[in-house]
Amino acid sequence: MDKIQHKFAQVNGLKIHAAEIGGESSPAVVLLHGFPEIWYSWRHQMIAVAEAGFRAIAPDYRGYGLSDPPPEPDKASFKDLVADLLSLLDALAIQKEFVIGKHFGAVVACLFARFHPQRVCGVITMGVPYLPISTPISSTGPDHLPEGFYAARWQKPGRAEADFGHFDNKTVVRNVYILFSLNLANYGSLYENSGFQTALKVPYRSMSETYNITNEKVEVPALLIMGEKDYTQKIPGMEDYIKSDQVKAFVPKVETVFVPEGSHFVQEQFPHQVNHLILNFLQITNV
Image (cartoon, helix red, strand yellow):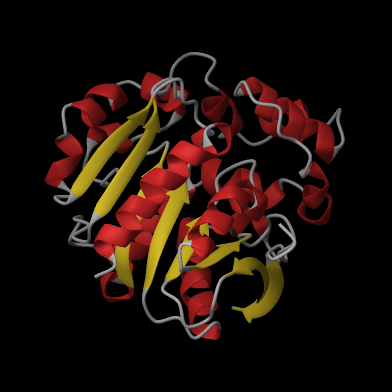
């Protein structure tokens, strides 16, 4: 952990924080967190990737962790996060990279691969498969989610604020992790800088965002890592979409691996297994 460096870059008018480890001339691996995470959720993977000869970069999105919030958090979008990632990589003089995304970070990773395919060597997603806009399962509005599902509740302004309003930021993060059967809230203090306003807008209130993309395929090599007990598979149609390999219609070069007993936070729950899968993919693909 002591070897991980912390940098700030001016990106699209905001100061964006990124944790980094590894040589600047080494192949770059960008790790994109989900909610309620920040860069710290990738600490195990960053060290393993760097020790294997890669350069690991884990940013906090705008409005998350140590990064500046946007001036109008209620207008934040997935497109903003993709644009920030491109500008951050340019600021770090990185022209080609592997992209790894967890939870809604998987959406950012896949969007980046679609908008900027020439920049991406390969994509790894965890907890969420690639979901093209044209696929019915990509609809994650409240009417398509299981009754009581937290994401459905939080999509409606005011509800998450009511859920969170009685607690400080550390308690909110701890309770969310407990909700997902983990208690890894020792970095909840980092939300004291950002709060949750942007974090609720992206992802939960940006599910219906539209994109001007004609080709919905991700053509680069890809790996999907799923915990066998990941709650994401409870979304109607999701388990069949993953296990029947329908995703290969849109990501032809994807391989899917299930981690036994793994939850939605599989990279923290079983870091050694996940690290092995990541490194194997990177080493095979980095030719």
